[in-house]
Length: 90
Length: 167
Image 1 (cartoon, rainbow over the protein chains, first blue to last red):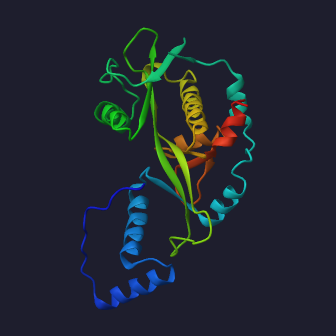
Image 2: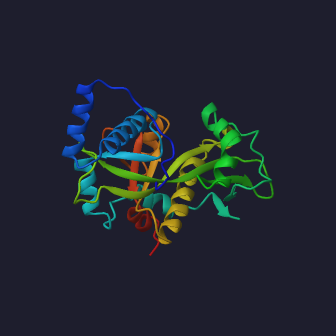
């Protein structure tokens, strides 16, 4: 994800819009451009459903993170694992 | 019938592949080689032993799962991003559909990911299902739907490791 930012995007906005964006950016400790970049990327991801990342709602994310090392119950996967394979490695 | 799985190579024939979904056929013929060479995806294919004609394939890409809270894109103290692997594409040729090949193809993909995860990297497996029916297919393999994102599911690498019986 650590790509160099080389391209520049300029946007024209009303002063009021600019102030609103800056104020919101300040709340979350981001620069205005960082904020706009993140907001635009979030939207682009959602629209394109791109594989670059998956946005998981905070509640679901937090409970998953708490138990990242604890395997979930996976009876179907276990059943599949117990069956003979249809493929072999080269 | 036992198929042979391996990384996409120059000798593989892609043009004849038909899984019934045009976008999946096209990705294989138009994008798979480039993605594989540029390391944006790892592409694996199934063939008959000694043959070059591709009968099934999947692509794995690195990805992240991000904590998403409306209006706040970053939470300072908390961990808010987990590295993951995505099964971005997965398709079976019509000629071998209906024999459980799809399930076993997912099994192959999960095995590859668990192997890669042991070298460091992803903690989750994410799938991008092309439609609701496909999402249901993954759910029947114990993948968990990501809320608010249709047809996106995940499984912990740890779940896969234990489910596969890898100590």
